Length: 158
Image (cartoon, rainbow, N blue to C red; front, top):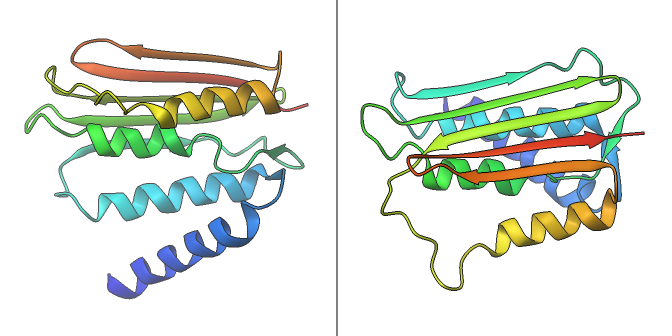
């Protein structure tokens, strides 16, 4: 397991160092990075932990996306999710249809989880980045539902 994990980590570091410096990257590479990150995170938890990652990459040829655009949402799901011992979950769904990138992520959370006064900067930065890079071409919904948290992002990639 260690060699595979090291290889995944190496690929992720290479992507972060070299690809993320570009204004746009291939969607295929971005999705590969996300898959590697989720696989790496899974190694930290028991086998029966409810982590769902479904990525439909059948319609991504030739599409470009700003690098690491969804990473804040994924990282937060792992940071704040899986808190409830028996009912903890992270569910990530990504698909592309007609040049529209659909990203949905949800995770459980404990109700007493409150962002610190200085917290939430990652979400704010993600929102600002979307406004700058995809003005009028995105829809973002971030909902705190008490016991769970959801993010929905739709992006027109044309």
